[in-house]
Length: 254
Image (cartoon, rainbow, N blue to C red; front, top):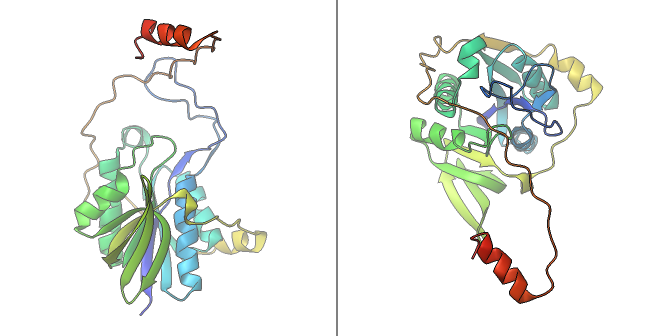
């Protein structure tokens, strides 16, 4: 029996953009900045499509939480091969203070509502690098989790997942329903062609709010200030090992 997959896609600042901190240090500049689908989520979408091409999956549902612009990201997922999309609309201050726990609650609620068998998520977003959502979704649903997948095989309602660890790799097996997060080596995402982009405009996209899902998105943490990392200092030359050790000691590095 083919499974149903929910794929999370986040609209993030494009990887090629140099992120700048606002002058008041309350966040980063997002206005007029290019955004695109989080690269790890692209990998999750690609894996869902491949599972459908293998007849393992029968339906792919893309979900995104955020402002109206997230619909562009969802349309990209639809053009790549998702069957339908769900936009959980969150705007203004609510979106600015949105945190991984709230996102996890929303995705878990959608997974329950849609009765999916598998939640596929990128292992982390390149903007906040939190690496928390997949783990918390699994916890909220009480589903098994397989994180940082570099290979996924699904058969007989079981997923066999290879993941990289320090010093090599390990293979784990989980029963569905489950949550899997994707790593860079899992696959190479495809590009959407023009006919697919046109077809995506006709695919269904439902709109919801957090209240529709019964989820409170109030933040539990407060960010006090954002700072750019210190600029790297220029290197220097030493004439001997003794001089190198001396300089390292001066800097408190040994």
